[in-house]
Image 1 (cartoon, one colour):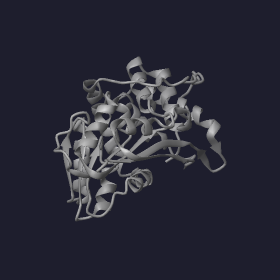
Image 2 (cartoon, rainbow, N blue to C red; image 1 turned 60 degrees about the vertical axis):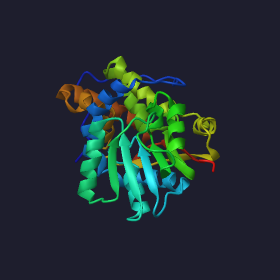
Image 3 (tube, rainbow, N blue to C red; image 1 turned 90 degrees about the vertical axis):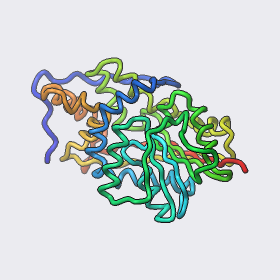
Length: 301
C-alpha cells in the first residue's frame, strides 16, 4: 500500500503551531466516557498490529515496578489491554491481573482480545480510579499506563492505589512527556486545530497535562508512597515512507470523527498530516520522536 497523494486543489494551508501547553486540564468523567467510547473501535482495530510497539513501552514500566511471577496486579485505565496483557505474561499462571477502565466500550475490546489470546489469568471490571471497588491491602502491584492524566482528582486516585496495595507493594505509572517531543501527537493536535471543534482540542490537551519532569514524583510523595523513582522514556522510531502509517494515530485520536468522515474531509486531514511530516523525512523513512515519563513507588510497611 502506498501513501495517498495529497488532495487536489486547494492546497492545504500550513498547519498552525499548537502553542504552549496548559499545566493542568481536566474533563469530567461522563464526557470522558463518551469521548473514549467514540474512539474504542479505532483502538481495538489497531491493537494487535501495534502490540509489539506497545510491549516496548510496557516492559520498562513493568520492570521498574518489579512485576514478576505470582504477583496479583491491578491495572488501571487498561483501555484495550495495555499494559495488563504484558503484565499477565510476566506474572504467569501463578499470578493474576485485574484490568479496569472507566469506559465499558474500551474494556469490552480488551475482553475480546484476551479471549483471542487465550488468556486465563486475567479478569475485567469497570472501575473509577478515584473510588476503587477493591478491599484494602489486596494487590502486590498497581499499574497505569497513560491514564493518570485523565483522572480529575489525581491525588485521590493515587491514595486509592495506596489503599488497595499490600504493604511493601509497588505502583508503576507512565504519562506522556512534552507535546513537542511526541511527533504524531503534535501533528494530530495541529490537524485538530485546523479541522475540528473546540471540544476535540480540549480532549487533546489532557494527555500532556503531566509532562513536566517531577510531576509523578511529587504526586507520589504527597499520596504517601516511599522509595519513589521517576525516569524518562525517549525514542526515535522510524516510520515508512510508502505506507499511510499515520492512519493508526488518526483513528485512535479522532475516533468516529475521522473514521465516519466523508472522503473529502479524510483527504484534507491526510494531506495536512503528510505536509506536516515533511520536516521529519529522511532518505529511508520519517524519523519521529516519542517521549514519556514513568515512575514507581512503594507502600510503606
